[in-house]
Amino acid sequence: MSGNKKHSTRVVIPSKMTSQEQHDLVDQLYDVHNTIFAGEDRQVFAHCLIPPDASHTSILLHYGEDSRIVGYCALHLFRHHSSGRRYKVLRIQFGLLKHYRGRNRNTLFLFSRILRYWLTNPLQPMYLLEAMIHPSSYVLMHKYIRNMWPGPGSSTSHPLASRVADLKACLGYQLASPGIPFIVDTGAVTRDTPTDAAYWRTSDKPAVRYFLEANPHYTQGHGLLAIAAVSLSNFGHAMVRIAREKLKRLR
Image (cartoon, rainbow, N blue to C red; front, side, top):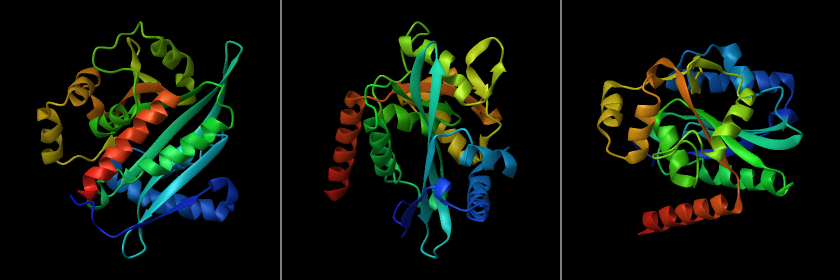
C-alpha cells in the first residue's frame, strides 16, 4: 500500500452538472466503487451518490497520474424535521483504490465543506450520521471526532442513541435484524483480501475491537449506525489532529 503515488483532485457539484454529465460521472465512479465494494448495482449506487432528497452534494474526485479517476469522496447535506425541530444531517461516501490510500486525502475537503454547511446556521443542530460497513471507516471517524456514538464504553442510554433512532430514516436502510436496533443492512461489502481481514481480526486498537464486537457480520454488508454532533469542540479536535499529522509528515 502506498500513499505516495502522484495524484490530483477536483471538486464537482452534481446539481450544477447536466444530466449527461451526471450519468458519465456515475459510470466512472461506479467502476471505482465496484473495485472496492461488492453488492451494489449501478442504479443503487447512483441513487446514493446523487440522492434526490439531499439539499446539497459535493464530490471530491481523485485522479491518478494517468488522469484516470481513482477515488471519490461525496458529502451530502440533508434537512430533517422531527418533533417540531429542524436538523441538518450529513452523510459521507468514499472509496479510493488501494495504491492511492494513506495520508487521509479526504480530510481537508470534508473539514472545509462541513464547516461551510455548519456556518450557514450554527444554531441549528447538525449531525454526521453514518452506517459503518468496515473497521477502517469507523476508526477514522473515532479518530477525528470526539463524543461520537457508539464507542468503547458507550451505552444505549447516551443522548445520541435516541438521536440515531430519530434520524436513521435519512439513511433509507432496513434493520439487519429486528432485535438489533443499530445494525442496518446496507447491501455493500468491502472487498477485503484474506491479509486485510486478518489484520483487522488481530488488531488491538480499542476502536477496532469495539467495531468487530458491535458489528460482527460487517462482511455480510451490515452497517453499524454511528453519529456525532457537529460542534466547535469537534472542529477544534479535528484541527489539532490534522495539524499533528502534517507536522509528523514534515519531520
